[in-house]
Image (cartoon, rainbow, N blue to C red):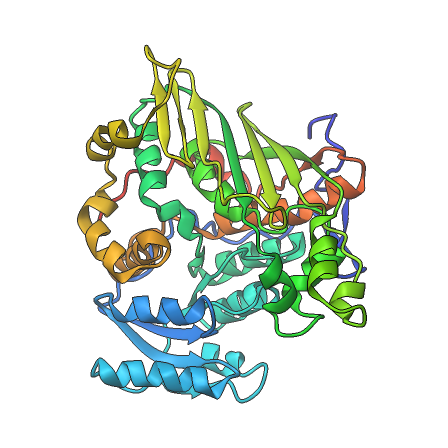
Length: 447
């Protein structure tokens, strides 16, 4: 371990982000067979059990219906009207009715155990992401979970340990990795257009104050709970996932250590004061999450990532999505590139069309138009789902595996610890247990 790192994986005590219990996380866990590059048996059809049919789950259900080889065999949600709406869509598409679950809060366990399910597609609230994925794999199912995949380091390790023990896929549904611009940048990185990669900027900057205080349906909801009890990066993966793939994180390089700091909190308090009467508990609540969190991550090979999270400030949406190398730079919001020998100014707007044509990713060239029609964040959601199903049907490794899910999600609780300890450095665990050193970076996959 680096002598300057403030926290060793071997004696790490981490105060849980959503509670007060201390969790011991060590680097000497029992290792199963690695699932890096896992190839599960081919499937003629993928039988999907969909748990959570709300804001993210129902659109996912609709997308899955449009993918060849998918059979929706189970639906699970606590709200009967959501299941009824999904069943109607199945009937309208001349598909068999799915088995229904959701009469109790843990009825998802019965769905995970059902013999007519191959893949559990999890779009529930964040506290259930890791528990459902872990349980599903233990029932012999592949697991796909919305972001983040875990909220504590212990959950990250449980995901890895369970995937290795069961030899099942565990994919975090990080849709931003499948955006048209992100995949174009990935191809440019792989073809050496930017030279040796040195630095990246990533972020999730998205004002969601109205959703934070009302979306959960009650003042003590899970979403609001993050803003009342945490101070770090509560949503790291949207910006981090794409740049981690550019850099080959967990495949030739890995996160080494990080530091994190937060600004003061003001935006949520001001929002509550201006939107709720004095007696409303949402106005009286104390918010701890700083308006802007900035983390710096250094990789084993000496590259750096600046990662930011701001879900409260009144400013335009951005994931930054910048990757810089020895020959040039690509950035987003708006999309633009600067390549030697003309690296002194950005190429953007209409002038960037030639780059989108020359470096179009095979996935977008193949299904991009269909993806845009079906929708989901400009089509990236459909590309993600299509590619996952393609890999399962053809017995190919997934583009995002359990090690990615753990490493990208772990930045959240690690940022909390660093902020709480005066921005001290904290080591990022090697969830691959050394396998990253001999694993090539993600290829320009097609299908």
